[in-house]
Length: 133
Ligand code: MN
Image 1: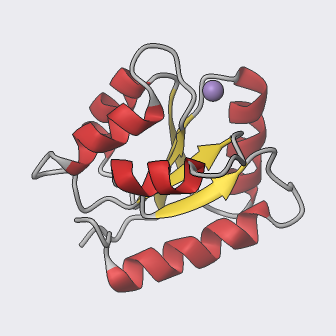
Image 2: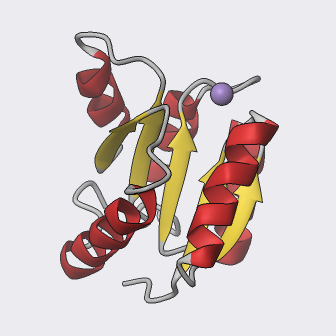
Image 3: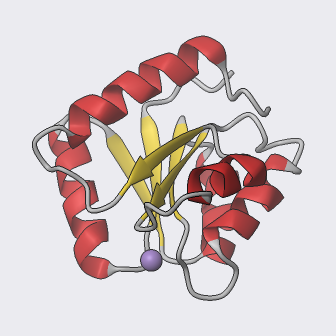
């Protein structure tokens, strides 16, 4: 089980990436970043984060595909993946879970509650391990 407090934020939108990093760092968490699905897999392997916040709408391979690849990797499958998606459409949540995501959050994020939401998720996943791992 991974015990670091490092969160990997995968987000191609610079404004969102900046905001999420800012909030998490102020909550005392270490943050690693990636701007594409391909980069997410490389950084996950290098940093072994406690959790991955995965934007699902990414250039190149999507967040869904990147999550599938992470979850099929023996070294990385235990890292919990939280889907971050702008789609609040029916079926989207199921699509995220089908790709292997452990949790699901919708964008835009609420800056007031985001860090406590993430802290709760981190505590939950560290207790249970990645359910798909
Ligand atoms: Mn995006």
